[in-house]
Length: 441
Image (cartoon, rainbow, N blue to C red; front, side):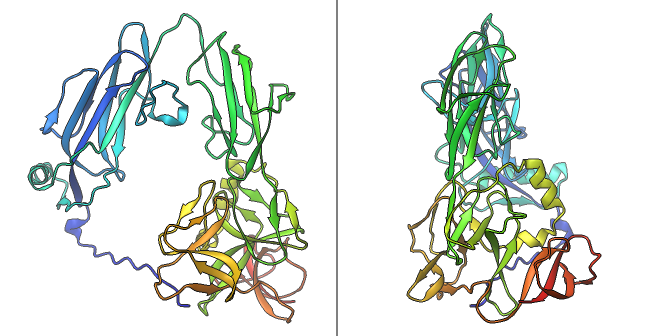
């Protein structure tokens, strides 16, 4: 099996160093059904094809330069008397029950970047002078096709003001510092606006491969193990949702792929081992043992004895960041396994999953439309002539010389000879950090 390399050839002409693409963009903005107010939009195009005045609905058709991977427009909202603006969203909920994750911005005005999916011939400016940009903008306005429907639809959400005090921070995540729960093992459904004295219902929803555990109060006392929590909102009284990662069934051979929603620390664990998957210089797939699994990473698992295993999931985002910042970047980026996370992935003809079938243990190509289950990992390789990629176990009955990534203080038992850092430079036993050691087993 030969490695497939993606080669990007960059021709660096100085005149194109600041090349700026233009596209014709159509966006709309409406007042959501939750309340009363008016809206309008602005953009960098001094002469937009269409720009409606302020109203409950508005739209803009303009020719824009790409910026940060998108085409920027600015959204504005003006609440009527007795109403307050709470955010812009690209989701219209008829029941008005918006969650924090629904909003693209809580700022007013808010600059948003529209991603253009349609494939067209993009007109590009050769420099960023004002004269050249405007000349190219006008060329694009005439040459570029206008879309048949808006590239993006936005909604301004308003709610009625109340004499009662608005409260925040009443719901927390035990395993995540982010208020919106990004990176947590579950999500929480709750009202977007909560006033003092309101009766509130919050629902803890675990992600794929995780389970809800309990709600606790500020004193750490369990309030309920039911994911549905109903309480009367009081200032200074908060509740915390606890989730856990489900036990994972693992066997004694590398027949289990895994993708964690939460970072997992396996240092000190003797009962279970995790491996990345990398190419060897012989163009073979080779497992590389790791003690730390970043969230979302794909790995292989095996154990000393078959069974169900729990993982410690008290690794915080700052812990993960600190660990990865101390690790050679290529150590994890060389990993060929891609994690599904908490969502299944649909095969497009380039995905391979681990199985032990007629040709033996290895990665078999999935047919188009087949799915990789959530919580698993897969390979993505473009090779129409390859339907199977064999995988060797990291150890067999024969005595062999293996390459093992480890640390000096946590080195595996065995007779170490030469030590190398991850750049291939020879080091001694006083070296701090990850090393590669040649060992006899």
